[in-house]
Image (cartoon, rainbow, N blue to C red; front, side, top):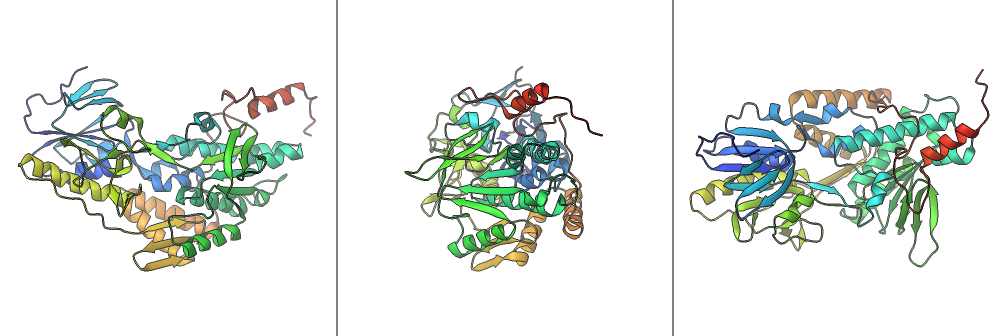
Length: 460
């Protein structure tokens, strides 16, 4: 299919790739500009990624952290939304090749975000999903809840121990938040729901190859986060590298020491991300993580009509690339919207100047750490600040209201209303069709064999 959208419209065509914080903010910032805006995304929703871990741990339902892109832009008359996947970007002909059509553009804003980075060990993805999409979060929620369900009916103590051991890999904000939420879920929300097992005895391990968690935070805040995690019962494993992930669990080792296996059926990956692979089709300089190296005005070298923003852009700031945070993405988006209009008028692009809004990470119920300029917070006060900031950035009043209500309910009643298992699966861990390494049988297949060969059990 060819580019047939609005052939009679001769206004400059701005195509934005991605409906995340960067792409959506850029589109909205061009609402009053005399340009035609087309936003392309492979999903139909804008996703509030910082709260994905709450979907994964049954704190929120998917609809509460997502908003339909068409609905968000429905009142913006110069904007059009296309649900499609970008396959290739040809800067020589100013053409985008999508799965279903091609699009020509006058300006293109690459805001395709990031994907999980397994550092060449792609087979690990089946056993240790990360958290970048709603599908990822729902799959993790399924595995977490199924682990408790299977443990309830498991009679073998070793198998039960593996089911009740959950490993989170990566001690950054994603890993810390996920580990704290898992500990909170098992020790408070699920504590009285089962009869044969005690969910409060579930082990949650946070594995970090470095010497401390939240290494991007000041050391004393990092230590506070570790203390708060341990108060929740999280076991922190520092200085050990993951060497293998399979159906049995996670194998780790310290430098120069023997490997050891942590038996587990629920593993979460939070150890790294890289830019979406579509950036490689641009034919421009990229960093090691696949991010587009941009100029001071966020354009691509030798291509003043091409911009990259958000998690897929490498913008050097104080000697290091800016982190993949929503305030960074949104500030970049506003600068690019302004620069598109400046370039159109023959003016030089405005240099991007990042205003650091700080960083924060929640650590379970009533616990968090936060830093903004000279202000540093820990514990309950930091948690309240975290709630306010995240509610502020949620798209749509309805989402803010629903999320606030659910958080308030969870806090007062220790309840989670989104403990839904979908997919008609009964076994925890990776799906039974997951491929294995070195001929290992998937855990679900092993359990099925054991059940098939075991004598009938009298349940009465």
